[in-house]
Figure 1: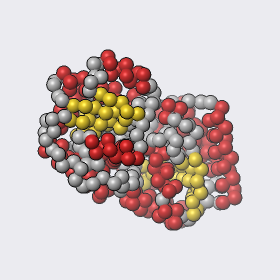
Figure 2: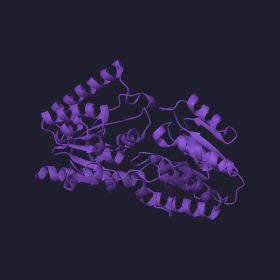
Figure 3: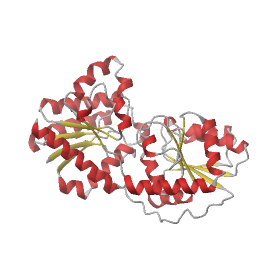
Figure 4: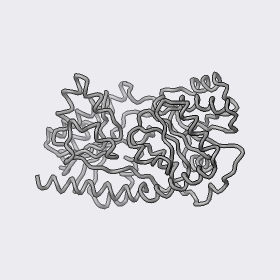
Amino acid sequence: MKILFILHFPPPIHGAAMVGQYIKSSTLINQSLQAYYINLSTSNSVDDIGKSGLKKWVRYFKIIFQTVFRVLFHRPDMVYITLTSSGLGFLKDSVIVGTCRLFRVPHVFHFHNKGVKEYSQSPIGKRLYPFVFKKAHVILLSPLLYSDVEDFVPMSRVYFCPNGIPDLGFSESHHKEVEKKLIHILFLSNLIKSKGVLDLLKACEILKNKGLNFKCTLAGGEGDISVEELNKQINQLNLRDRVQFIGKVFGEEKIRILQKADVFIHPTHEDCFPLVLLEAMQAGLPIVSTKEGAIPEIIEEGVNGLLVPAQSPKELAKTILTLCENPELRQGIGNAGRKKFQREYSLETFENSFLNVLSEIGTKLSKS
């Protein structure tokens, strides 16, 4: 089966781009399919996402040209697109969908974000979504996300494929020290307001006032929060002695800080399926996150993590305190998370599920 993949690659580094890189680098996927690739990314940094500029438009029109060329000369059986769900990104992706529709090429959308239901209330969304979704097959990361597209896509054209990540090489025994006087809390994400980093800082203020002995490490690149703004907030909350920002981390450095951590915090406001939770699970860390997107599928409440309402620093602090004061609970939740990762979220599991979904779509298309 010939497939034209139009998807994101790093930079910048975010969930969709990392999954795109896993697909392009997969020996299994590329030996099973005749695959062609076009990079859908027009931004160089997370902070650049959503902004306009001449270089970005030049890249965009290059993508359109590459799409027409690949469709005309390679005649793919289907086009796979990691469609942006709303906003300017959706409008730009819609032109690519229209190009595929013009040449009568079947297409499948793989969503790594949500926002269709909300954007469909806008005049543009009301008009454009019915056109974009007409006859399209859709891959979602979880059944919990179907409500976002249910107005436009019947369940008969929807498929579910959870993300997976590579083995980072953690040992089974690196979290054996249960009783600790100093608790290490880790936040690993870009500095974006919707990731909840400011909620975590407010929770840290509460924890400090309660007398908890802890250190909180923030790791990630700048987003809509600058390092200067972050440091200003840390100083205002009198957390300079408790919170440290270390910037972007990769490879061995990322493994090191995950191994050092005792509790992993991801208080996001609007994520779908955060890959960083899979990394924390692989590291055997107890996780505190929110009930957004597919997170309640990844994190089973009280089993391999604890969930709090988004934008609730008090609840976040209370839950972190519960973990910090109960070392056996931390260890049990962390061990359960590692086992669930190995069972459900390895890269090999993802590759096989992804190929099965594409095969199922291909079979349906051949009969239509």
